[in-house]
Image (cartoon, rainbow, N blue to C red; front, side, top):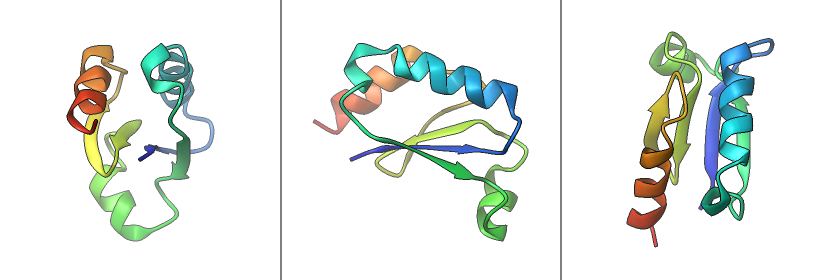
Length: 79
């Protein structure tokens, strides 16, 4: 199980979400893969206008800004 953050280089909101996620103690034991949303056409089409987009174990957690309650829900659901 891991987090995936769809981002693009130079995205300030993406950097903010990544920093906020790193500050959530319950999330710190899971790896975070930062993926360039433009690397594949399918992800660019699906998430390109919504970045940052955070997934956990393949499920959408939030986009735009980190919602800590949604992170906790995702982690609880997958335990």
